[in-house]
Image 1 (tube, rainbow, N blue to C red):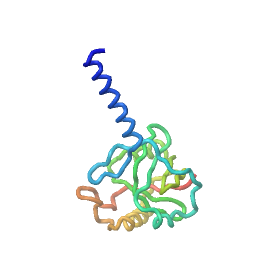
Image 2: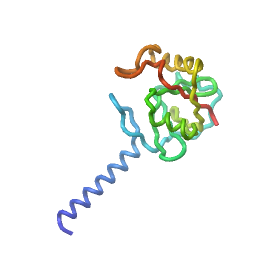
Image 3: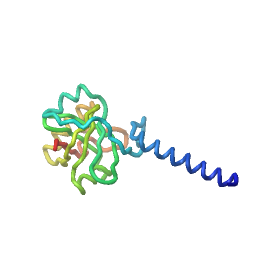
Image 4: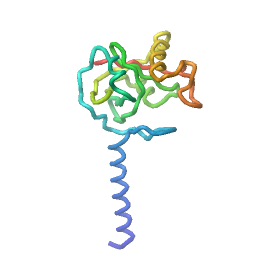
Amino acid sequence: MNKGAMFGVSLGLVLIVGLFAWVLTAPYLSNQGLGRTPGLIIGGTLTEAPDDFAPLNESVQGPLYMKQAGFPPLVVYLSWVGTEGGVITATRPDNGYWARRIRERGGDGWLRIGEATYSMEATEIHGDERMAMMEQWASKSGRSLDEPLYAGSEPLREWEVFFWEPK
């Protein structure tokens, strides 16, 4: 094998190993702007869901992991609020991937909060109930409903809300 072919094979192997390493370690929280593409492994221990997720608000800091059933099996980070009977998540009203997928395919999936992974079902919330849930989400994030999460985004009152209940 000549040096050019050897270099090509070596470069190909490095790219493949790099791609697999990236897939197995993502997602991670980015410091600014758009985060990295989601990972594939949700991790945690499959656990029976509690009747009340509210105590987790204090004991588990940071975002949760979410993985929807079906293909592709991507894992993303979501901000959340635990309540009695379920978990509130919210997203910008930009026809984003995971919200669109819930609308089109149903909300079957898993949420990992801390080291526990729960089998859950998401439902999009509308009307007054959406605003009440969004107030809880905004309160946990330390913002008002009229405030954008970051420069250039919509005020929180315009965000879409999904409620996850145990299956």
